[in-house]
Picture (cartoon, one colour):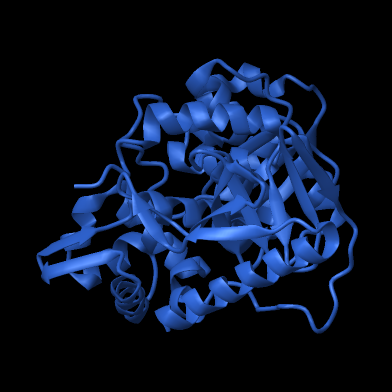
Length: 355
C-alpha cells in the first residue's frame, strides 16, 4: 500500500508538471524524487528549465483543503530552500490565500503561483474536470491514523513518548479509544515506517516532525469539529481578560489566540477558544453571560484525553501547546501563523526531536 501511495503522488506531480507546461510553456524538471536530508523526508525537488537557480522542495498533497489551510501554508513555508505545494486542485479562494502568504503552488489543472525573480506567474480559476486526477483524501495506509480516534492516539504518543511502551490496554484507557483501535493504529504506524518495535517494551517513533505536521493538518477537519460544544458571543469584548487564570475554576482552559497570547505575549486576541469538560459548562456561560450565536467570536470545545494535565507548561490555565499551535494554524491568519511558529520553536521542537 505504501508503494501505491508513492505512485499516486508521483503521478500527481507529473500531471501538475504537464499542466504547468500546457498553460505557461515552462518546463519543470524533477531533480530528486523522495529524499531525506538532515533527518527529514521530502517528496521531491524540482527546478525550472532556463532558471536552474530556482529550485523548489516539493510537498505533494492529494487533498488540499480549506479546513487545514493554515497548517498547510506553514508546512510549505518551512521547506528548505523554498517550498512548493503540488496539489490535485487549488480552488480560487485558496489560490488567493496562498498568494497572499507567498506560498508557491502548482496543481494538476494548471493553476500556478510562482514569484521568484525574475519569474512571476499567477494563474487561478481553471476548473477541475471530471477526468482530472482525483482521490478521496488520505491514503488508505494511513486512514486510521488520521481519523478521530487515531488522532487521539497519535497526539498522546507525541506528547508522552513513554506511553509508547505501555500495554495496549493502558494506551486505550489513557486515550479513551477502543482497545482494537490501538492495535490497528500501531500497525499503520509500523507499515508506514513511523514506529520501530524492538520488542513490546522498546518502541520508538520515527519522523515525529512529519507525524506532527500530519496531525496538525487533520485535527481541525477530523477531530476538532466533533469536540465543538458551540459558538457564543459575550456582552463585553474583553470579558475573558477579567477571568484570566480563574478559568480553571470552571474546569476549563484557554486555547487558540488567548492561549497563544498568554504563552508568547505576541498576539492581541480577536477570537476566543476554550476547552472544557462538557459537564459544568453552564456555570461558565451563566457567570459570564455568554449566549449562543453562530456569528460569535467564542468557540467552546470539549477536552479530550489529558489535555488539562499539561506537563509541558507551568501555566495551568492553557491547554497543551500542540493544541494551541493547531488552533492557530487552522485559522489561516498570517498573524496567527507567525505566532504559531514562536510556540513551535519554544514549546514543541523538543517533543519531536529524534532519539
